[in-house]
Image (cartoon, rainbow, N blue to C red; front, side):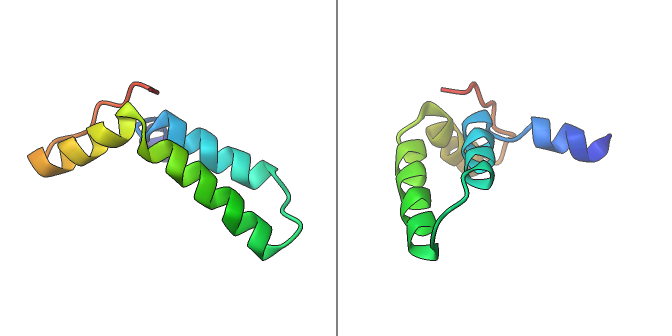
Length: 67
């Protein structure tokens, strides 16, 4: 139950991207890395990403909203 609770506290957009990467069978390493690069770039522009940086700087637990 503790592991599940910790997963639920993670950023929902990051978790969705991770699940998509696992479910998407890459044809090559280069293809997988290119897909990952695009997903990371998309996530960097989200409010959740800004919240993570802010929470880290303020030494508090982030409050992710899936945006």
